[in-house]
Amino acid sequence: MNLNYMGIIIGGFLPAIIFGIGGIFLKASARQGISLNHLILFAGAGAIFLAFLLLVLIKEKSISAGSATMAFCVGLSWASATALMSIAMVKFETPISIIGPLTAIASLITALLAMWIFSEWKEVLIARLLMGATLIVIGVMLVSTSSKANRIQHTIPPGNEHGDEHSY
Image (cartoon, rainbow, N blue to C red; front, top):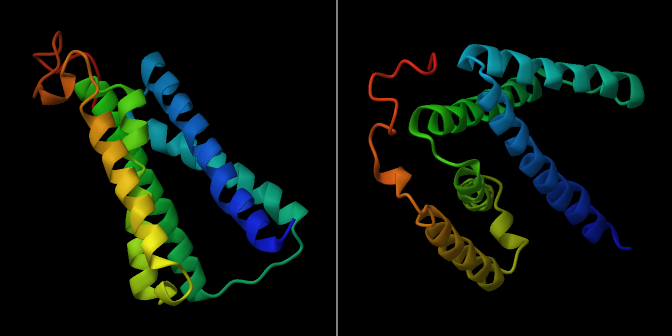
């Protein structure tokens, strides 16, 4: 198998599967009752656990102030997105089966920013990328309107008029 396909599998498909499973853990954690600060704390603990494991397994140890700053921003953006997803599930009772697919928009934002910031437009077939992006947008539109109860349109979820069911 050529390296490009291996990169797509390792850097694209496997993370998509892992992020998808992570969404299920996010929903399960919210169902069992967890405050937003504890959710981010324990999710961060999971990331730190993996970091220590990788420090032992991978011998490469390169780092700079710039790379550390960018890595910190990765964690901050992930934690922010996770917190917002949790708020939507708990406060607004939005199903993870709707929220999860909506995060596919992230791939479009990443692609557009990478083409602009890193000049990756020179390395991709723009027409194919635009066709794929169009399909993602169509899918996101279908997913975002798929709630039977139209819960997404409610400002305050039924049964939570006083906001006292959850701490956030």
